[in-house]
Image 1 (spheres, helix red, strand yellow):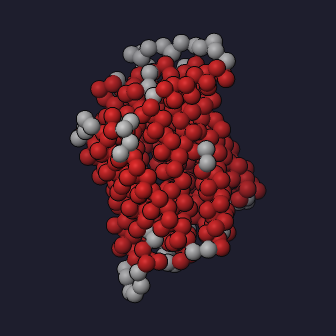
Image 2: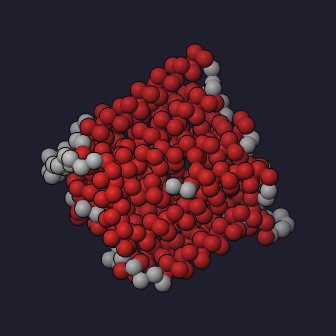
Image 3: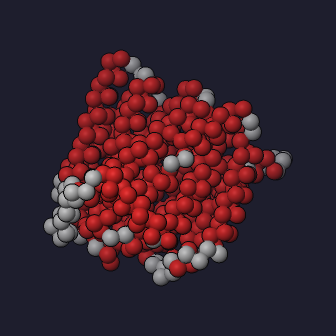
Length: 399
């Protein structure tokens, strides 16, 4: 119970600061430059550290004291943000300096995320995994529910530097809380004497051997491509540049998506499906359909209340994404041995995101010169086809 309370309070503190920072940073770039390419750079800065450092972070999580890694990551993030706030207060806002700050924050956060995920079973036990995964998604959803509207309103009259300071304080609070984590019930992770390359090879061998994980994460590469192009890059541009919605409307739409995530988290916090195959397939189909529906303004004409339509689409997208995340994460925790969780999860994270930066960059260049609705429709259709293929995959049916 102690670990659960600390986890909840720490996650609320760090996620709240990070969500507001990320949302306002995206708005800052989009409304300052008006360029989909510059907006895409912010997304690439989130993925490149995860691709490069995922395996390293995973091996570190298996070799080192996980509590020290978790607490140290948040303390370093807090220090970096507070120093950046002081520097920007003296020199003024500098877009490229903020890009650099965001890159390093995501690098540190990669180490934190992989280590925390690898520690969940040790902190909460096998029987508590369903609930803690749902709570984790619920916290993210609840904070994401509040932060877009709050961030959009504050962005209209508050300097961007304030959000940097706020995020630094939130990381500091999170680190202080994490100092009280009790790892005494967990088994010590033995310090491996294998080389980095040997451990990396070991994780790839394990992924290849476990067919369910292999199929799931090969599929995740394509899912990330379709979601990145169809929703992450295209949707903000459609809302701001084509439909001419305001910052507040954009924030409300993001909040509606979070309501869907929160609803999905609440359901899976109570309901524990024994056969995850059906739940994941249905959720993937719903996610794919929601992405396709983002292209509706290209297909329909006339006086249509697009803001209301997108509220419904974003709600469905939030429900489906969270449903997939919760059930896949529980599956990973159940299958992967504890002494390998860090390196396998870190490698899988890099594996899934490996093509994202190039795809996002190419997609943003396309959107800067072409109608984004076509790209969204193609991605949604391809996603639906992939979901139908997975429905008949023999390894997927074993889940």
